[in-house]
Image 1 (cartoon, rainbow, N blue to C red):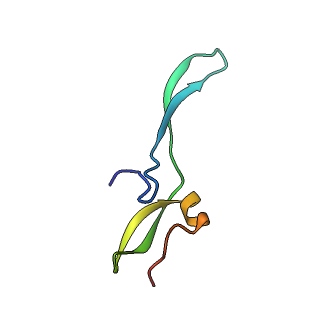
Image 2 (cartoon, rainbow, N blue to C red):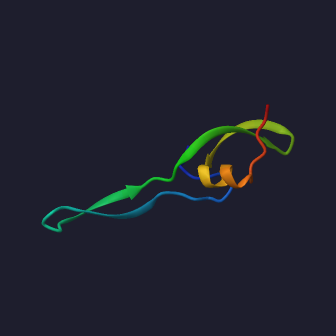
Length: 63
């Protein structure tokens, strides 16, 4: 399962870690994803949703 938000398709961002000597090494910035049960066209299923979408109310949770 890819680490991508089901609602907004937010995925990992890429950048560099900088040491004290400014040597650049590659790193990933992971989005804050939560695995929640949602109603997807009437059927409940578990998907990854970012916390930004959860707080904005873009998701209807299944019971």
